Image 1 (tube, rainbow over the protein chains, first blue to last red):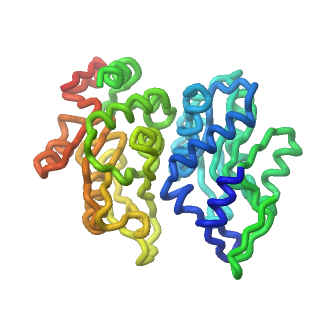
Image 2: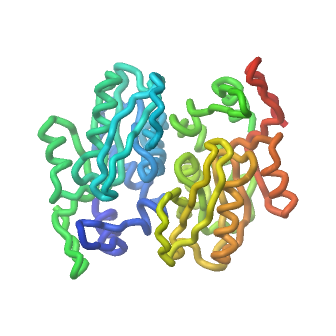
Length: 192
Length: 192
C-alpha cells in the first residue's frame, strides 16, 4: 500500500537492533485517516470472505482494528489483553508470548465467551516480525475452534521469518507494507 | 444516551465493590457500531469547539477514541501509555495514577512531541469514577500547555466524585451514561 510505505519513509525512524519507530502515526499518535484507508485496503484484500469478528491484541492493534471493522460491516472487535496476573480463571484462553523487542515474556488472555467455535475471524495487528504475538493469537483461535480467515498486518519486517512461516502454513497474510531492509546508519528503508 | 444506557442494562454485570463489567461491548469485546454512535453524540455535544487532537489512555480508551475521531474530521488520536519502567527519558510527560479498581499505582507517559502548546484537545475515556486517570491526563495537558476543550466519557459512576469535581473546575464533561446507583444483589442499574 503506497500511502503507508510513503508514510513510513517520511516519518519512520530506523534504530539499531532492527527497530522501526512509527509512533508518530501508528502506535502512540494514531493517524485515524490512514487507519481508515488501511481498513478499506484490507476489506478489498479479504473481499468475499466471511468475517464475523476481528481479533487483535492490546494496545497498538486496538485502534487499527476498530477503524478497520467499520469496513467489515461493523463486526465486533475482540482484543487480547496482556496481563502479568497468575489468575487461573477457567473462563479465559491464555497463552504466553515472548517479545523479542522488549526482551521479556508476557501472558495474553481472551475471555472464552468472546470466541465461539465456528466463528470466522480476521486477525489484525500493527507489526509482524518473528510472529510471536501472532502465534499466540492463533493458538487461542485453535483452542476456541474459530476459523481464521486471514491475518492483516500494517507493517511486516520481511527480513524476519514470521510472515512467511504463516504463509507456508496456509494463512492468507496481508501486510500493507513489507520492509525488505532498513539501515539505522543511513535511515534508508527498502520495501518488498 | 439512550442506546448506551439500554446496552448497559442489557449486558452490564454489577459486581460487589462498585464494579460494573461491560466487557461484552465496551472494553474487551468492542461494539464498533455503538462506538460510532457514541462518536456522533460527542461530536454533537462538543459542536462548535475547535478540536485539533483527541487524547486517551490505553487500552480501553483507544478504540473508542479512534472511532470517535472520524466524527471530528479524522483528527489524530494520542494515547497515553501505561508503563512500569523507571526510564527518565526527558522526551516524555509522565505522571503517576492510582487505580482504585486494580489497587495499584502505575505510571503513564506521553511523548512530548505529540502534544504541542496551544493545541485544542478533547480527552476521551471509557470510564470515570474517582477521576484518577483523568486527573493524570489533565496534569500532562497542563504541563504541555494544551487547551482542554472537553472530556468525553462513555460511562460515569455518578455516585463517585470524579465527574462532578471536574465540572466544578470548569471542564465540559460529557458522560454518555451516568450511573446513579447499582446493586450487585439484584443487578439493577439506575441512571441519572
